[in-house]
Image: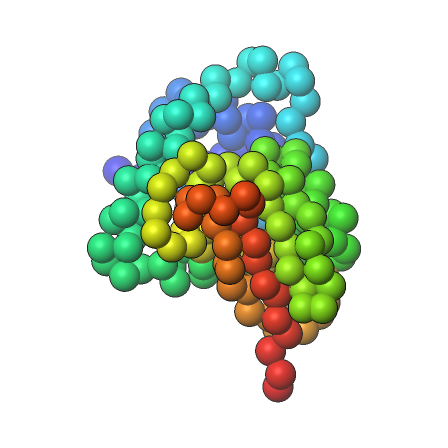
Length: 180
């Protein structure tokens, strides 16, 4: 079965998506449109109309997903997905990334230190209230890496050095420029 997505904007996309099964045939265009929509953030009227996934269900899904990813040693896949997403965001400045985190309720992004560059995410949507023995925010690390490559115009690597899932007060990410 093949169904093409024919939506002129994100509102129409959500309407179509609710009505029938959809197979997306143009990944790049959809990702770009989704990122554009997410950058704008949600309006209160849209939030009230949309049926949001309960936070507890989302966290349960993340917990199960992370356990499975760990079993399969596939953490790098989440980093890569986040990285591609961060590149699509293409922020020019840190403040744009900070606003993106806030608008989409991913957590509160702050600069903890400049040398070395360490970013702090308070109230991390992915791992708050989860319990793991090591950092698990691979998607966030990748997203920050992709976004910071756009900001700095240099290749970077991002490592999560503290994680709320380990009991830390927030998630901390060290951003390092890759020497060529």
